[in-house]
Image 1 (cartoon, rainbow, N blue to C red):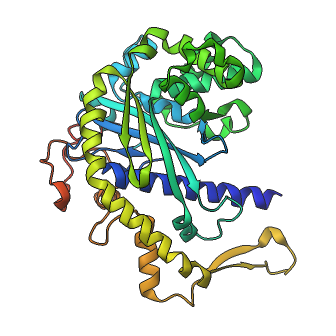
Image 2 (tube, rainbow, N blue to C red):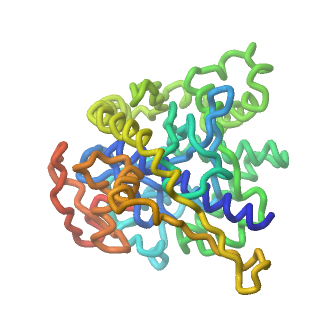
Amino acid sequence: MKKRKALDAYNRGHFGDESEDFLASLFLMARHPNGGLRPDLISINGRYSPMLSIEAKSGRSQRCGYMKGNMVSYQLHYAVTSEDDYRKLFGVDFSRESLLPNDLGFYSNPKSVAYYYDLIARSSGPTTGELCTRWDRIRSTFGNQIIIPSEIAFDSFVAHIHLRNRKPTESIVEELKLIIQEDVLHGNSHAEERKSDLQSRQNIQSRDMFAIFHEEYKNLSLEKVLGDSNERVRIISDLYGWDRLDSLRRIEIPGPNGTRIYVLAELEHTTLFDVQLRKTVEERIPVVEEVALKRKEAIGSLKKVKLICSRGIFGDDKRESQYYLDTSKLSKKEINKLEKLLNWCAPNEEPLSSRLAALHSDVTSYHSDDPVQGEEESEVLEPTAAGKGDIPF
């Protein structure tokens, strides 16, 4: 049982990588090399203004068409991207004696960052139990997605905890703020300890976010239909503010292969999503659709790959089992093709993420004011002085 759980956790990591690679290609963003401490995706080269940062949450599409992702408490501090954020949240100035590991530019860069969550449904593909190799990811396809402000994701976390233990939401908020403050000041130093707390991991439901998008929270006749979702949305509405929910811009953008991208955008980010992101997605749709077609054609190659289980030195000790891939029946060309298809990039492209990782491991800063190179974005990114780049987190 423990072995199965460990393998499932490993596979869920592959699904997370898959959604991040898909969105990075579709939105022309980069995966943060320090993704264990910061959000999944970051904008570079001034493509988006303000800078855009996205935490991706994917999940299998349910019969009702919605999905649910998984949030953990140590991700909540991602929204604190400046000293001003820290001051507003905790009412005190930030202590410069403590810094998040390898994030020196996080506190000194004054530029604003729009931090959002993207909830995206996997419409088809293998389950965690069916994912035998990392290349099995090419069997996955994606459906609709909804992008929400990070604060609403935080409020959703609170709502789920409240429905589990019925503690007052005010107490839950204060407890989570202490966790955020601890992680900002010291990194995720207590993340492992918190894993024993069942409340440190909560679902986030796209059903709730679509109810907000379509303003279903205003329709009392839907209360019985929405069930628990209605109660969660009510809690989110109380925490975020009913007036603020009403003021969010509801934006709908056509996505690849007939999908839709829904955005709950804060007023000051209307242009960011309704103009800038819309334009980028429009440019990228032909690329992503072509890759999706090539991934479908390459599925046959997976039949040549086997996941081999090698027993330990005593033969029957399952705890000593090791897994490895037998790729002997695959040609080098086929392997290279499968690897390329994982990135959701066109044949002549390299993911922006790979260019970032080649610079330096701590990712303190990069240019944000470089001119946009359009489809020819091949110019090497050069690191700037700490605190003056485009990654202030």
